[in-house]
Every structure is written in C-alpha cells, then in structure tokens.
Length: 231
Length: 81
Image (cartoon, rainbow over all chains, first blue to last red; front, side, top):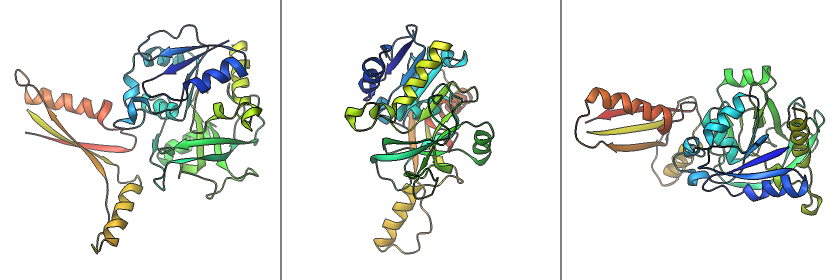
C-alpha cells in the first residue's frame, strides 16, 4: 500500500507523517507537492499538520484552491482514503469533505499538551485495530481546534456514527473538564458519511513509536495499512 | 468600483475573542459594554472599465461564498460605491 503525504506551503508535520508511514510502518510513501495534480498511486492521502498558507484568512481556507485538492476530491469521491490531521482537518472542513468548522479555542490560547481520546467507532479504515471505547493518549497542538457545527449537523453526525474520537479523561469519561478547546460534544475527530475521509485535531503521527514514550497513535496507521491492502 | 465586505460570526456562534475584548474594555473602565463581536472587513477595488454594477455584485457574492466567508459559521454583507 502507499501513502501520499501532501506538502502545502506551511505544512510542518509532513516529515513526521512520512517517518511513521515509511520507517515505523514500513509502507510505501511519497510526498505530494501542492502544485501537483496527481496522487501518484496513493491509497491513503494524508493532509498533515502545520499552518498552510500561514492560516491567512482562516485556517485551511486558502488550501482549498491548491491544485493537489482536485485529485484529492476525486479520490475521496471514489472511496479513497483521506486523513486530515490538525491543520489537515481544518483544510478538509474548508474544502467541504467534512462538515462543520474549527474555530478559535474557547479560552483563546494555543494548547500544546497530551489529551485523552475515546474511540467511538471502530468500523472505519482508520480505527479497525482499536477497540470500541479504547482510550488513547495523544498530543494536541493547536489554536483553532474548537469543533463547531449546528445542532442538526451534530445530530446527523451522531445518528450516522460519524463521531470517531471524543476528548475524555484517562478513564474514558467524556466530561467538560476533559474538553481542551470547547469543541461541541467533545468532538476530536469525525469521518464523512461514506467513512473514507477522517479528520482529527490530535496528532497520532507524534505518538507512534515507543522511543517517543507513546505509541498509542500507531494503531490508526496500522488500520489504514490493513484497509488499503484489502481494498 | 469599490466594495466593502463585512464578514461576521453568525449570532448563534460564540465569539470568545469578542468576550475577551468586552472584559478588557470593562476593566479599562468603560462601563456598560454589553457585548462585543469581532469580524473582518475587506476593501475590494475593481479595475476600471467594462464592469457593470450588477455583474460586480454577482462576483462579490461569489467571492464571499467561495472564499471570504465560511458560511458554516459566518455571515457576510457588502456595500458597493
């Protein structure tokens, strides 16, 4: 299987994602420059964290006009895997591949620390190697991670089981205190209706090997590799 | 032709930045500040020649919908002069 890792001007987690895909997971992986119009046979496209186009106007807003977005839209429409991490999640909402928007953190501060996530659904290409309810410790690093959608969109997400990760405490309890940024219903990650596009604010690529003190994120990449092979 | 575009968060969307500014104004001694909402303002100048006002307005609407505002959370308005 092959990962394609998008480099937008201002991406800064592209090499982290490449390292996990290639060195930790042992998969094939290639960078996809934002001006390219070809995904080079990628099974899973990762839009990494960073500050694409300096977050000018709104985080992710200018990235939707990058030439690489057109083949990504087509890839997603035909069931291909697209994973947006942090800024990549913001890009996916701006592009319209995922519903809602990511707003300024409730307390206005940039937050860089570990949080706990509860795995809500395991029937996606990203979570098949996790158990329902499994708690992951993952780092977050964002100023605009406050997930917002109107109530009817949120109800739709719940009804279709599109909420994949929620902020929780160490025991897996979804509480107000465990919500770092004010996200609606503690939402940390969602997928699209057809479950092939996932966006999440936390950084699984920063916690995927024991030498970093935490390998909780690796299961997500393992799940992707399995899904891509069986597709 | 020139246009002024205003983009604001929808009334139903919380604006923590506006709240923080409201508190700062209050602590500076400006009493009675009930609410502050933060928005964005764009001044757009169109090159002279050929463009009708009607066409410009149509374009402005598209600019707002496609880029200047995120209509999930923001409303926009504009004036043309």
